[in-house]
Structure formats: structure tokens, C-alpha cells
Length: 519
Image 1 (cartoon, helix red, strand yellow):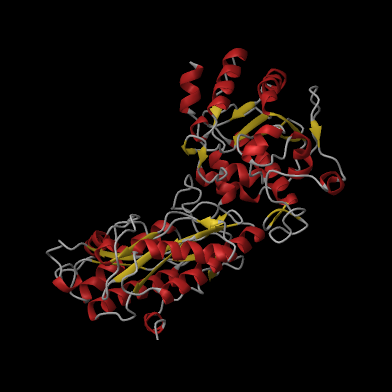
Image 2 (image 1 turned 90 degrees about the vertical axis):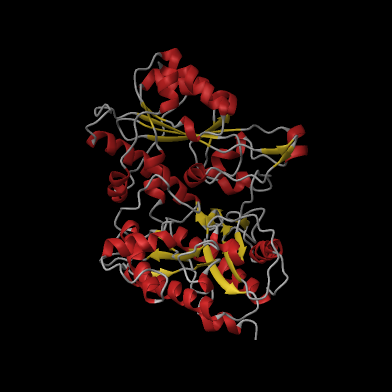
């Protein structure tokens, strides 16, 4: 029975309810004792950490990247502590108010969040490691094969514990320095830290003593050994509690960016904007899409981005009609438009920008028509955000479809016989079959458990990205428009005063400015 329940994680949390819980305050907390001898945080962390070696950049070793009062780039240690405390208070409150599928009387909770693990392209050759975003959000740790366990009791005592890889001189010779158990408590501000091998006995003891509700989602775990240990413990103690997924609650928190996160979003968008401007300025006929890929990667890293946020779309000519074209292998030709969808990651936060420009510096007449339609539509959509027709991302999408159908009708691409909003919306959708927006943050398609029908709130970041895609074989469209794809995408922050800030505003998109780039 447990095995079936374990892998199904039957109980989920309402995303709408999550956002309603966003204003819960942080309570003062204290840690309960554990008999197993742990490494505990002390008050003189700077002295303890001085001269040590860590498994990730820190202010002591990388002052050019991380300020003295920060744990990671742009985020202070106290913010990570507050996130953990806020999560535990929120889930306790959620359970107390929930009426379906959960024991409402439970006040004891245990949350398990795993890190990512290394993945290999071939024997002993790893891919670049990227941390699990939810794990990173809650503790700032960038090491693989690590587990964060948080607990809260009926007196609101909250404890955070990290289970780390221990120091290992042989492994570190090959794979790089590990922070180790001894330094983890001070560095990450958790109450206790242990070697990974201690997870099972400590978790077992917690369950036996407190019988908490267990928040763990095996489906998002990269650590198969952790899944086995969790299953073994639950079967051993014969717990009758259902597993709860904590991911919806975490995404509800991540949806609203703190001031520090907003600054990181501004920086990653500024980097990508400047990089894309340079790439558009330098491209010329004969460049391979692959060369343009290399150019955007180089320009972003040159400005201190960690790497690109996702495999970029670099689509010239008719390739731009494939929405997720990432082959990037064709040569550009004079007369082509190039559609590039690219962003970077800086300090764990991502940008996502699309620009379309003529590789020879001059739009043809049909290209001008389609580009002007998309740009005008995008500006109008940004302007109606927070207003009727743009109060949610889904409303914005419906508005886009109707407006796009109308504009394409005016330029002779959609039939003049369509005279109702539903018909215009369907016609617009045929030429832009993707959503006009998604949330943006630590991941490109951020907080996927949060629906797009929520009212836009201060602290949210999202994209606005209308497009037009006309395949070469679209026989019901005038010939001069066939084989063309155009998209314009910007990143938008809803500010504290309920206004719109275009984070990617530095990235050139006016048609006349794009043409002047080559002059």
C-alpha cells in the first residue's frame, strides 16, 4: 500500500490558496534537540569559516561575485532563514484550514526537499550541474546529493537540518571541494547538519516521536536512494498518514519575488538585453545560426552570467515558423529575418527575451507589415496588464488572440468575413498557437504548479510574447507572407505600486532602431 501511495503522492495543495497565504508573518522559532551528535550553527560564523574551503562560491573566496553580507549572489543568509520559517508556518496554517483529505488537527509537520544530483553525458563526464530550484530557494546550497529537512511542532518550534556529503579528500581531488558537514550549519544558517548516511535514523526517530504530517514528493526527487530510504522508513513505522507534496506551497512563495529577487531579475534581464543588442548589431548574411548561438552565449558570459538559461532558438528564414526550433544549424541569407529567443542565468535567476531582426539590416515590405503587427500588439498587451482584459495571464492570452485576428484581417491575411470576437480569436490562435505569457524567475517557465488564471500581483514577473508563424505551405495566405515567423518578447515585473516595469526595456525592438544597428 505504501509503495503505491508513495509514488502517487495523492494529496496536492490548491495553488490559489497558496497565494492567499502569502501574507503570513514569520514567527520566532527555536530548535528542538536531537540525541545524535550534530554539527550546530554558532554565533561566530565568520571566524569559524575564515580560511576554509567550500563547495560553492562564498563572500570569503569570491568577493567579486558575492558581497560580504550575502550567502549567494544578491541574497542574504537571513532571507533564506525567513523563507524556511515562512514555509513551515504556511503549511501548518493551510492544514488547519483545509477540509479535504488532510488531518486538520495535525500541528507537527516534516518537510523533505532534495537537491539535484550530478548527471553524466558519458562515463565520468558530467553535465554542468544545476541545482534544484526549490532546494536552492530554501537554503542557498549549490552542492549535489544533499537533503534539507524542516520540521515544526505544536509550539511553532521550527528546525532546519541539512544532510550533506562529508569531506572526502580522494573525491575532492577529482570532483572539487565539498563544504562538508562541519561548515554547513554556519554557512547555510541551519540548526544542524549531518552526513547523508544519518538521514534515515534521524528521520525515523522524528516520525516515531512526533508522528508529523510528511511533506515529500518523490516525483521531483533526483535522488533514488532517498526515495528508497523514505519508502523503507514509512513501511517500517507503519505510518497511516498520507504523503503531501510541498511543491505547490514553495511555488506559491516563489511566485512573489522579494526586493532582492527583483534586483536579480533586473540584472539578468539587463545582461541579456545588452548581449542581444550586440548580437543583432554584429550579425550579417552568411553567419550560421550556430555562430549566432555562440555569440549570445559569449556576450552573456562576458557580462558575468553563469550560462544561458535554456537552449536558445536561433531561427532564420522559414525556420522561425517552428516555435521551439533549437537545431540552429542553417546559414543565414540576405533577406532573412532572424528570430532569436534567448536568456541567461545570473545569481540563480533567469531572463527570457525574443527579438526578430533582418540579418542584412533592412526589412522587406511584407516583413515590415508582420513585424509592425507583432510589435504594436505587444505594446498594447503590456499597456493593458492589470486592467480589463489583462488582469491575469489567461485573460491576456484571450485578448491577444482577438487582437491578432483583427490585425491580420486588416492586412489581408485573415478573411474579412469573420465579424465576431470568437471567430477573430480562433483566427488569431491559428497564427500564434502558444500562450502569450508565463511566469519567470529561478526557472524560465517558473512555478509551473501555479495556474495562469491568478490576478497579477506586485512581485510577480512574467513574459509578454505575441508572435505570428506562417509556414511555407500555408496556401490560404498571400504568398509574400509565407515562410515567415516573427515574435517579440519582453520580461515584465509588477511593482509594489501596481505598475509595470519592463525589465528588458534596454533590448532594442523598434523597427527603425533595428535597421539603424547596421548603419
